[in-house]
Length: 139
Image (cartoon, rainbow, N blue to C red; front, side, top):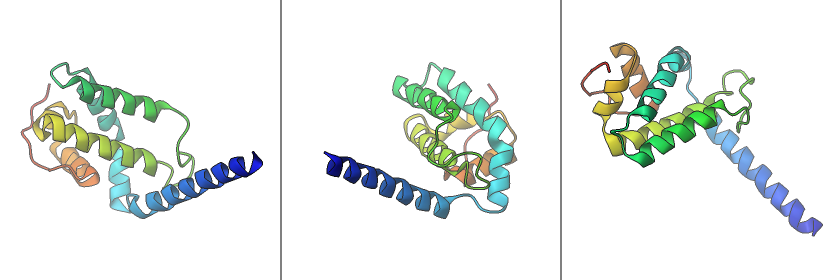
């Protein structure tokens, strides 16, 4: 019994350490980190707008709602109070979710809901790997 618990604990610790190392390697650096922090208010508004858009497929809206719940939870892979890397796990989850939204709904939908500037959208595209083009329409 104890052998199983120790093995499970060791496996969870090894998995957490591997995720931590991966996040350290892909975290935004320098100017990209500053851009990520600057974009946060617009990003939150974007997620809310996309999740409320009933023209989007239901599974996309569910993913966006789940992302907002995840971001609101105080439990993270890396605690947010750690400087620089504390928000890396959140940034990676946001990037993967936005990429999946673009695959299902298209970049123009994300662009149409973007509440910030054109430069802010270009920065979002760089941070998340989204295509930087798309028409700009405020909703």
